[in-house]
Length: 111
Length: 114
Image (cartoon, each protein chain N blue to C red):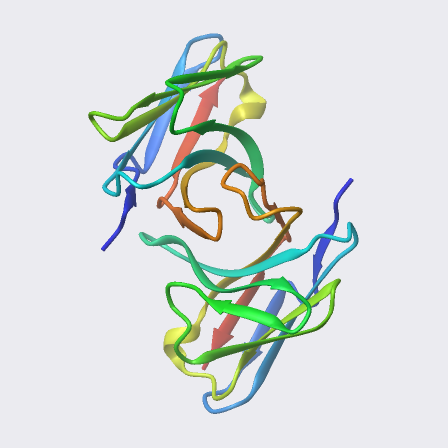
């Protein structure tokens, strides 16, 4: 059973607007959450992470929010740029040696 | 820059063949991982290794084995390939095993078993 779920397979956003990608998880023991970005024909690349003891982490245009009570996290990209068009994977870590990935959300930023 | 390379981008094999997928990283990372990526299932961990000659099973180890004889190289072996092993295989490495230890991925090998 999927422990990390991304229920939106795709998302389209106008350039300059906010992109919000969502992720839900089931295991309350996850200690870190990470977002990866994947371009076609390339491997995923790390974007941003958040510890389970925090509720927000920001890095430039990217902010991840964690709501532990709802077992939900989201990635906000502001402002969205065409180069952000990619597949975004949410991942959760269990003690650092097991990583669970979601199914990915394909983001298209329209110029 | 960390570089993770995989021996082949595309591979076509027949059912029953023994298949080797090779992965090499150049940043002296302790940890290496093999995942497979399937539509609707995301990335699933097959095996990982935290040191030379050490390995741990991931979520879906059945039908696979691994080898890590040198720190920089991690091989995934399909002992007898089957059609349900047709998939995209991704190798990754990381410096440490903490939860925030970001993983660096190779470009992937698209394996088709006919």
